[in-house]
Image (cartoon, rainbow, N blue to C red; front, side, top):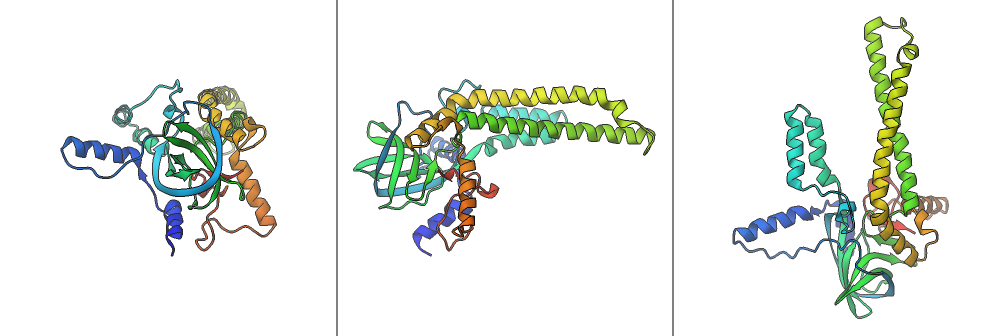
Amino acid sequence: MTSFEQKQLCSRFVKPEKLADLRTKQEIELMNGRPWTRQLPPPPVLPPYGPLEKISGLLEAFSYESFREYFDVKAYRTSTLPTISDGQRAGAAAAAIAVGSPGVGAVIMAESESSNDTAEYVQGIINGRAFRGWVGITRLQEGDDVEMVAEWQHDHYEVYAIALPKERIVSIIPKCDMGHISHALWRIKNLFILTTMFMFMFILVCFIKSLNETGWGNFDFWKEYSFFLLMMFGLALAFSGLIAFSACRACAPTRCKLAEEIFRLLGMKNASKVNLNKITKKREQRLMDEGKWHDPGDKSKPACPSGKFIYSGESWFYY
């Protein structure tokens, strides 16, 4: 197996380290006076300080490291959401367990880990200038002809997306895969899914309660519970709607705004309506119809983006 194939295997199938944990270990080692020789990458610069630009050229040098890092709304300087520290999260989880809700505690503790995305910290040289930054999975090598969306920062380009224009493949900073209109539509779809789940749970509880009280076939379920279920439907819809509205309000000026700037620079029309996940699924289907598709997990073929759920956290897409 070549070094390039090994790189692809590691990127896709080996779970990368969580960068926050490594930074904590570094602090502990330095506080105890022990040496720390491993160079850790800086956090993502979100949002960019100025306008982005598109750079085209050959990669004169390229290297990468895979980590799990946080890229969601609270990573943006412009975010108005309150920040919850790991200590506060641990305290909330402990309180939930203390009052008899270990499941809730587990969810709270898992939130920090689940909100981190797999990404590559890339470095190299293009057109005689250094670049570095965070993007999704790549399969880039020196000599590749690429388009890069980046911001010049004093002595280097800070990268937010790298595309292979011949293959229409882009590796993009995680969480920036939709424009604000597409994001809103996705949230609305999730709103109805969440409401349906709530209602199924309410109906099931009411049905079991009535069955235990009156026995099978001796009750008029809808007559007895219609008002309660209608009230629960309104509450579930309002609760789900509030979640969707709050998420859209937080994401539109942060993740979605950055995504739309990247899309426009890559020449994509109607940036606010772009959904890279949908584009990738359509491209996969077209490749299948043409007999040119191969399983993304096939190690004998070049790695490629996929719309399949198992590959959904890789942050590279067809565009």
